Image 1 (cartoon, one colour):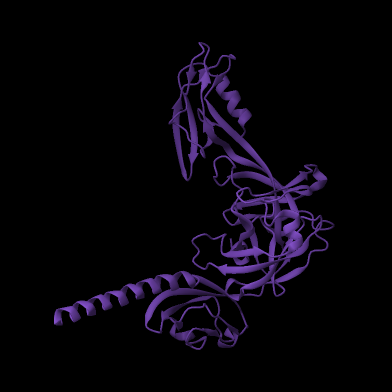
Image 2: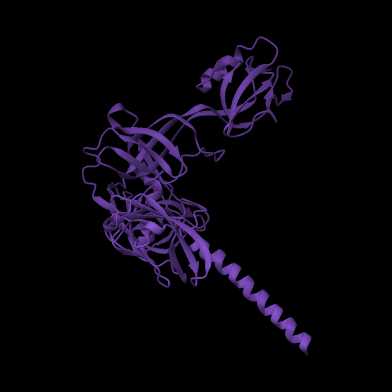
Length: 414
C-alpha cells in the first residue's frame, strides 16, 4: 500500500510538472515579444493569462506596477523614461514565462487606403521558374540544365557578362560558339556559378532548357500613406506565382487601377478581383522601393485626386486590439467604404507575422459582393474604434468569409 501511495505521488508530481511546462509554453505564445507604447499615455494591458510583470531595469521601477493578470503602464514621460526596456512576465508571479521588450514611441497617424493599385515590377536578375527539355536537331529530348539550376534561382550573368532581362539571356545563349557556358546564379543569399552546355534545338537556336521570367504584374490594395508620401500595401510580399519565392526587385511602380469584375470566393476556391491597370505615365502613382515579407513600400508621386478623400487614423498597437467588431476599408464596390468584420483571435507568437489577426466577415453586403475575402483585397486596412490596427493579408481557402490580417505596427516598423 505504501508503494502504491508513493507511486501515485510520483505520478501527481509528474502531472503537475507537465502541466506547468504546457502552461508556460502556452502563455509564452499568448504574450507578445515586443510592445509599442505611445509616450505620455496611461494604458492597461490584459494578455488573458495569469501573469505579473517585473521590470528588469532598476532605474525604471516606477514605470510598471506588478498586478495579477494586468500590467499597468504609468505616464512614462513623467518618469523621464524613453527608448526601450525589458520586462519579465511571471506565471502566478513565480515562473518566468517571457521577457518582453517595451518600446516607447511617438504617437503615429496615417491615412487609410483601401483603393486598388496595379503593381508592376522587374526582377533583379532573371528568375528561374523551372527546367524542362529541349528537342535537339536529331529529335532527341535533352535536359541540359537539370540538377544544375532550380526554381527560385536568379540568373545574373553569362560568362561574366551581366544579365538583366530574359532577352539578354536568350541573346547570349543563342550566340554560343562551343564549349560550356558559365552561368552566374544568385541562390538565396549565395552567389554561385554553374557550367551548362547549350543544346541546338530543332529550330536552329541554342537553348538551356530553362523557363524564366523577368517581370511581374498584379492587383492589390493600398493600406496606408503618410504626409511625406511614404506608403505601405499588401501586408505580404509580392511573390512569384509559380515558385512561391519572394520576388527580388530591381525596380517597380504602382498604378491607378479600376476593378472591372469580381469572382466570388467559394469553399476550396478563393475568389479574385479583376482589374484593368493603366500603365500610362499619367496613371503611375508611385515607386516601389522595397518588397518585404510584410508588404511592399515606396513613395507616392501623386496624392491629389486618387487619395483626396482618405481619412487620417491614429495607429493602435496589437495589445490595444479587442475581440469583436471592426471594419475593413475596400473599394470592391467602386469606391473605398467600410465593411464590418468580427475579430475572433489574436496571435502574439510572431510565428507567422502576417497572420496575427484572425477575423470573420459579417457584413452581408460584402458577402453578397465577394463571398468574403478574395485575391486583390490584400492590404485592405482594418479599423477598430476609430484607429487603424492592421491590414487584410490572407483568406481561408475552405471558407472565404474568414481571413487573416497583419498588425499595422509590423508594416510601419518593417
